[in-house]
View (cartoon, rainbow, N blue to C red):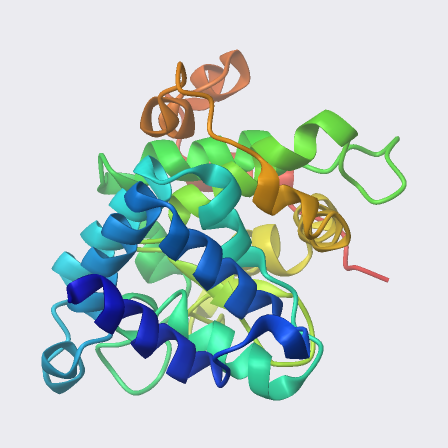
Length: 268
Protein backbone atom coordinates (compact mmCIF):
# COMPACT_ATOMS: atom_id res chain seq x y z
CA UNK A 1 0.00 0.00 0.00
CA UNK A 2 2.85 2.40 0.84
CA UNK A 3 4.39 1.59 -2.55
CA UNK A 4 1.19 2.46 -4.41
CA UNK A 5 0.55 5.61 -2.41
CA UNK A 6 4.12 6.79 -3.00
CA UNK A 7 3.83 6.32 -6.75
CA UNK A 8 0.41 7.98 -6.93
CA UNK A 9 1.68 10.97 -4.94
CA UNK A 10 4.68 11.43 -7.23
CA UNK A 11 2.63 11.05 -10.41
CA UNK A 12 0.07 13.56 -9.19
CA UNK A 13 2.82 16.02 -8.35
CA UNK A 14 4.32 15.51 -11.79
CA UNK A 15 0.96 16.15 -13.43
CA UNK A 16 0.70 12.96 -15.47
CA UNK A 17 -0.10 9.30 -15.08
CA UNK A 18 1.27 8.33 -18.46
CA UNK A 19 4.59 8.66 -20.24
CA UNK A 20 2.81 8.84 -23.58
CA UNK A 21 2.96 12.61 -23.45
CA UNK A 22 6.74 12.59 -23.25
CA UNK A 23 7.10 13.45 -19.55
CA UNK A 24 10.50 11.96 -18.84
CA UNK A 25 10.22 12.63 -15.12
CA UNK A 26 7.16 10.36 -15.07
CA UNK A 27 9.16 7.76 -17.01
CA UNK A 28 11.86 7.99 -14.33
CA UNK A 29 9.33 7.66 -11.50
CA UNK A 30 7.80 4.57 -13.12
CA UNK A 31 11.22 3.01 -13.68
CA UNK A 32 12.11 3.58 -10.03
CA UNK A 33 8.83 1.99 -8.93
CA UNK A 34 9.63 -1.08 -11.00
CA UNK A 35 12.88 -1.56 -9.05
CA UNK A 36 12.30 -2.83 -5.51
CA UNK A 37 15.31 -1.13 -3.95
CA UNK A 38 14.71 2.22 -5.65
CA UNK A 39 11.02 2.16 -4.76
CA UNK A 40 11.64 1.29 -1.10
CA UNK A 41 14.20 4.06 -0.61
CA UNK A 42 12.04 6.57 -2.47
CA UNK A 43 9.03 5.70 -0.32
CA UNK A 44 11.12 6.57 2.73
CA UNK A 45 11.90 10.09 1.55
CA UNK A 46 8.36 10.62 0.23
CA UNK A 47 7.05 9.77 3.70
CA UNK A 48 9.52 12.09 5.43
CA UNK A 49 9.52 15.00 2.97
CA UNK A 50 6.28 15.04 0.98
CA UNK A 51 3.57 13.55 3.17
CA UNK A 52 0.85 15.70 4.74
CA UNK A 53 2.50 15.34 8.15
CA UNK A 54 5.83 16.53 6.70
CA UNK A 55 4.20 19.54 5.08
CA UNK A 56 2.55 20.57 8.35
CA UNK A 57 5.87 20.49 10.22
CA UNK A 58 8.99 19.86 8.14
CA UNK A 59 11.19 17.22 9.83
CA UNK A 60 14.23 18.59 8.01
CA UNK A 61 16.86 16.33 9.58
CA UNK A 62 14.87 13.16 8.87
CA UNK A 63 13.96 14.34 5.37
CA UNK A 64 17.57 15.05 4.49
CA UNK A 65 18.72 11.75 5.95
CA UNK A 66 16.19 9.87 3.83
CA UNK A 67 17.32 11.74 0.71
CA UNK A 68 20.97 10.89 1.42
CA UNK A 69 20.04 7.24 1.78
CA UNK A 70 18.10 7.32 -1.48
CA UNK A 71 20.97 8.72 -3.55
CA UNK A 72 23.67 6.74 -1.73
CA UNK A 73 22.01 3.32 -1.81
CA UNK A 74 19.65 3.43 -4.78
CA UNK A 75 20.70 2.30 -8.28
CA UNK A 76 22.49 5.35 -9.74
CA UNK A 77 20.93 4.94 -13.20
CA UNK A 78 17.47 5.27 -11.64
CA UNK A 79 18.16 7.85 -8.94
CA UNK A 80 19.99 10.05 -11.44
CA UNK A 81 17.11 9.69 -13.90
CA UNK A 82 14.82 11.16 -11.24
CA UNK A 83 17.20 13.95 -10.31
CA UNK A 84 18.26 14.98 -13.81
CA UNK A 85 15.16 14.16 -15.89
CA UNK A 86 14.87 16.81 -18.62
CA UNK A 87 11.72 18.91 -18.87
CA UNK A 88 10.35 20.55 -22.01
CA UNK A 89 7.89 22.87 -20.23
CA UNK A 90 7.74 25.07 -17.16
CA UNK A 91 5.01 22.98 -15.50
CA UNK A 92 7.16 19.85 -15.58
CA UNK A 93 10.19 21.83 -14.41
CA UNK A 94 8.32 23.35 -11.46
CA UNK A 95 7.06 19.96 -10.34
CA UNK A 96 10.53 18.44 -10.78
CA UNK A 97 11.98 21.24 -8.68
CA UNK A 98 9.50 20.66 -5.85
CA UNK A 99 9.25 16.87 -5.94
CA UNK A 100 12.66 15.27 -6.27
CA UNK A 101 14.43 17.77 -3.99
CA UNK A 102 11.52 18.72 -1.69
CA UNK A 103 11.39 22.17 -0.14
CA UNK A 104 11.58 20.55 3.30
CA UNK A 105 15.18 19.54 2.50
CA UNK A 106 16.11 22.46 0.27
CA UNK A 107 14.83 25.73 1.74
CA UNK A 108 14.04 27.28 5.10
CA UNK A 109 13.62 27.51 7.96
CA UNK A 110 13.37 31.27 7.34
CA UNK A 111 11.38 32.90 4.52
CA UNK A 112 14.47 34.35 2.80
CA UNK A 113 17.64 32.54 1.73
CA UNK A 114 20.66 33.10 3.99
CA UNK A 115 24.13 34.15 2.90
CA UNK A 116 25.83 31.21 1.21
CA UNK A 117 28.60 31.51 3.79
CA UNK A 118 26.22 30.24 6.48
CA UNK A 119 25.53 26.77 5.01
CA UNK A 120 29.13 26.60 3.76
CA UNK A 121 30.50 27.17 7.28
CA UNK A 122 28.11 24.53 8.63
CA UNK A 123 29.21 22.13 5.90
CA UNK A 124 32.86 22.67 6.72
CA UNK A 125 32.21 21.50 10.29
CA UNK A 126 30.01 18.56 9.28
CA UNK A 127 31.47 15.06 8.93
CA UNK A 128 28.60 14.27 6.56
CA UNK A 129 28.76 17.35 4.34
CA UNK A 130 32.46 18.21 4.17
CA UNK A 131 33.76 15.09 2.34
CA UNK A 132 30.86 15.31 -0.10
CA UNK A 133 31.64 18.92 -0.97
CA UNK A 134 35.32 18.05 -1.44
CA UNK A 135 34.32 15.18 -3.73
CA UNK A 136 32.07 17.54 -5.71
CA UNK A 137 34.84 20.10 -6.10
CA UNK A 138 37.34 17.46 -7.25
CA UNK A 139 34.93 15.72 -9.63
CA UNK A 140 33.27 18.76 -11.22
CA UNK A 141 36.19 21.13 -11.72
CA UNK A 142 35.99 22.17 -15.41
CA UNK A 143 38.60 20.85 -17.83
CA UNK A 144 39.84 23.71 -20.07
CA UNK A 145 40.47 21.31 -22.96
CA UNK A 146 36.88 19.99 -23.03
CA UNK A 147 34.41 21.84 -25.30
CA UNK A 148 31.63 21.65 -22.69
CA UNK A 149 34.01 21.93 -19.75
CA UNK A 150 33.73 18.28 -18.76
CA UNK A 151 35.81 15.33 -19.97
CA UNK A 152 33.79 12.36 -21.17
CA UNK A 153 34.80 10.07 -18.29
CA UNK A 154 34.34 12.93 -15.81
CA UNK A 155 30.63 13.47 -16.39
CA UNK A 156 29.33 10.46 -14.45
CA UNK A 157 31.66 11.21 -11.53
CA UNK A 158 30.47 14.82 -11.45
CA UNK A 159 26.79 13.86 -11.44
CA UNK A 160 27.34 11.29 -8.69
CA UNK A 161 29.24 13.81 -6.57
CA UNK A 162 26.49 16.38 -7.12
CA UNK A 163 23.82 13.85 -6.09
CA UNK A 164 25.85 13.23 -2.93
CA UNK A 165 25.20 16.81 -1.84
CA UNK A 166 21.42 16.34 -1.85
CA UNK A 167 20.35 15.96 1.76
CA UNK A 168 23.23 17.99 3.22
CA UNK A 169 23.41 21.56 4.54
CA UNK A 170 24.18 22.75 1.01
CA UNK A 171 21.48 20.76 -0.79
CA UNK A 172 21.27 22.12 -4.36
CA UNK A 173 18.22 22.30 -6.58
CA UNK A 174 17.11 23.83 -9.87
CA UNK A 175 17.00 27.61 -9.60
CA UNK A 176 14.22 28.22 -12.14
CA UNK A 177 11.81 26.50 -14.51
CA UNK A 178 13.44 27.48 -17.81
CA UNK A 179 16.94 26.01 -17.48
CA UNK A 180 18.97 23.24 -15.90
CA UNK A 181 20.91 25.68 -13.68
CA UNK A 182 21.28 24.60 -10.07
CA UNK A 183 22.37 26.15 -6.76
CA UNK A 184 21.91 25.77 -3.00
CA UNK A 185 19.20 27.86 -1.32
CA UNK A 186 21.32 30.90 -0.52
CA UNK A 187 22.57 34.17 -1.99
CA UNK A 188 25.38 36.64 -1.42
CA UNK A 189 23.44 39.81 -0.71
CA UNK A 190 24.28 39.81 3.00
CA UNK A 191 27.85 38.51 2.90
CA UNK A 192 29.50 41.85 3.72
CA UNK A 193 33.22 42.04 3.07
CA UNK A 194 33.29 38.31 2.26
CA UNK A 195 31.15 38.64 -0.84
CA UNK A 196 33.97 37.39 -3.05
CA UNK A 197 34.21 34.17 -1.03
CA UNK A 198 30.45 33.82 -1.15
CA UNK A 199 30.28 34.31 -4.92
CA UNK A 200 33.12 31.84 -5.45
CA UNK A 201 31.23 29.17 -3.53
CA UNK A 202 27.91 29.80 -5.28
CA UNK A 203 29.72 29.87 -8.60
CA UNK A 204 30.72 26.24 -8.09
CA UNK A 205 27.09 25.54 -9.01
CA UNK A 206 25.88 28.50 -11.06
CA UNK A 207 29.00 29.04 -13.22
CA UNK A 208 30.28 25.48 -13.51
CA UNK A 209 30.68 24.50 -17.17
CA UNK A 210 31.45 20.88 -16.27
CA UNK A 211 28.36 20.41 -14.12
CA UNK A 212 26.16 22.14 -16.67
CA UNK A 213 27.62 20.03 -19.48
CA UNK A 214 27.24 16.80 -17.51
CA UNK A 215 23.54 17.49 -16.83
CA UNK A 216 22.92 18.32 -20.49
CA UNK A 217 24.81 15.20 -21.65
CA UNK A 218 22.72 13.06 -19.32
CA UNK A 219 19.55 14.50 -20.84
CA UNK A 220 20.82 13.83 -24.36
CA UNK A 221 21.55 10.22 -23.41
CA UNK A 222 17.92 9.54 -22.47
CA UNK A 223 16.27 7.00 -22.49
CA UNK A 224 19.08 4.35 -22.70
CA UNK A 225 20.21 5.34 -19.21
CA UNK A 226 17.05 3.74 -17.82
CA UNK A 227 18.28 0.40 -19.12
CA UNK A 228 21.57 0.55 -17.23
CA UNK A 229 21.85 -1.95 -14.43
CA UNK A 230 23.55 -1.42 -11.11
CA UNK A 231 26.70 -3.50 -10.84
CA UNK A 232 25.85 -6.08 -8.14
CA UNK A 233 29.51 -6.11 -7.12
CA UNK A 234 29.51 -2.38 -6.49
CA UNK A 235 28.78 -0.46 -3.31
CA UNK A 236 27.13 2.81 -4.39
CA UNK A 237 27.30 4.35 -0.93
CA UNK A 238 31.01 3.67 -0.70
CA UNK A 239 31.76 4.90 -4.20
CA UNK A 240 29.71 8.04 -3.61
CA UNK A 241 31.86 9.00 -0.64
CA UNK A 242 35.14 7.64 -1.99
CA UNK A 243 37.65 10.49 -2.08
CA UNK A 244 40.17 10.46 -4.91
CA UNK A 245 43.83 11.31 -4.44
CA UNK A 246 43.02 14.86 -5.51
CA UNK A 247 40.38 15.11 -2.79
CA UNK A 248 42.68 13.68 -0.13
CA UNK A 249 45.20 16.38 -0.99
CA UNK A 250 42.55 18.98 -0.12
CA UNK A 251 41.27 17.43 3.11
CA UNK A 252 43.56 19.30 5.46
CA UNK A 253 42.74 22.71 4.03
CA UNK A 254 39.90 25.09 4.68
CA UNK A 255 37.15 24.87 2.11
CA UNK A 256 37.23 28.63 1.68
CA UNK A 257 40.99 28.54 1.07
CA UNK A 258 40.54 26.44 -2.06
CA UNK A 259 37.51 28.24 -3.44
CA UNK A 260 39.49 30.93 -5.31
CA UNK A 261 41.39 28.15 -7.11
CA UNK A 262 38.11 26.57 -8.18
CA UNK A 263 36.25 29.83 -8.92
CA UNK A 264 34.74 29.49 -12.36
CA UNK A 265 34.17 31.94 -15.23
CA UNK A 266 30.60 32.86 -16.13
CA UNK A 267 28.83 30.64 -18.64
CA UNK A 268 28.45 32.22 -22.07
